[in-house]
Amino acid sequence: MNASVYDKEIEAYGKLSHTERIQWLAGLAHELTIYARDTYEIGTEDVCDPKRLRGFNELSHRVIGQLRHEIDGTRGYPR
Image (tube, rainbow, N blue to C red; front, side, top):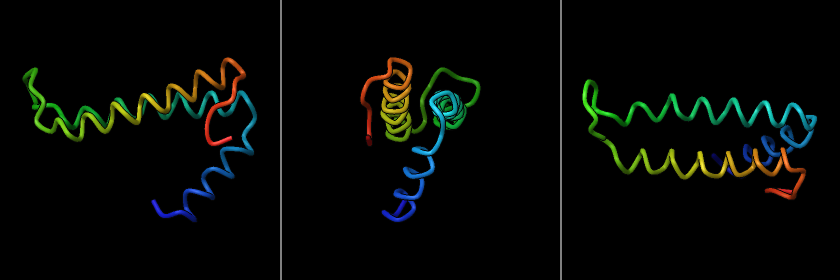
C-alpha cells in the first residue's frame, strides 16, 4: 500500500464514530482469520506457508491491540 492510499484509509478511519471503529476493527480481525486459513495444508494440522501465517498473526495482533484501545478509550495508533 503506498503512502497516499494509507493516508486516505487513516483519514476515513478517523471519521468513523467510536462504535463504527470498534465494529470495523472487529470485522477486520474476523476477516484476517479467514484469509489466514489459506496457510494451512488442507485436511491436515500442518502449515504450508508459515511465513505468511506469521504475517497474519502479527497483523491480527496490531488490529486487536487497536480494538482494545478503542474499547478502553485509550490512545492507539495512528492518533
